[in-house]
Length: 153
Image (tube, rainbow, N blue to C red; front, side, top):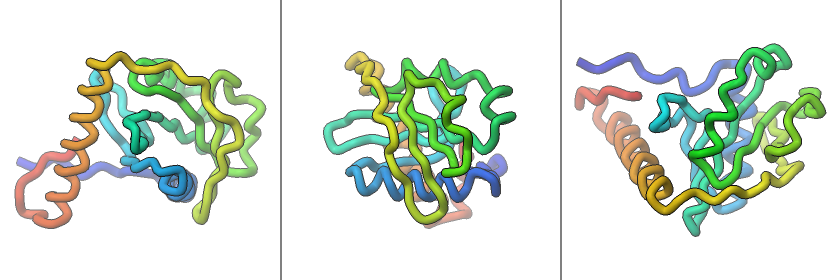
């Protein structure tokens, strides 16, 4: 039995997600939102570059969202670089400086601060690439054939 579809983004984060994904595309990264990781967490955005470089982008919609959601530390072991994406009016000075920073709205995004690199191990990279590919293929099939009984996670 199919599970309910993912929300993918709340109305508060949808514009930031859109602008972030547009920026990533301009930087030759393909991305998926709401991607499950092996540790049980779900990355807001997982992006993969042409060379296999992997970024995780954590979208924050408010100060309260940032202060109450401290699981972002657990994403580092699943990416080469960790970044935050926020709206232009977000007080970005409260975000950690050891992560990259993207400012985005519904139309575009800007990479304001590059993220420090911490390369993945080859085994973790392979597992992540397989997960990315399978997630993308499953979502595509679900769009093409909604009656296929695909459980989205």
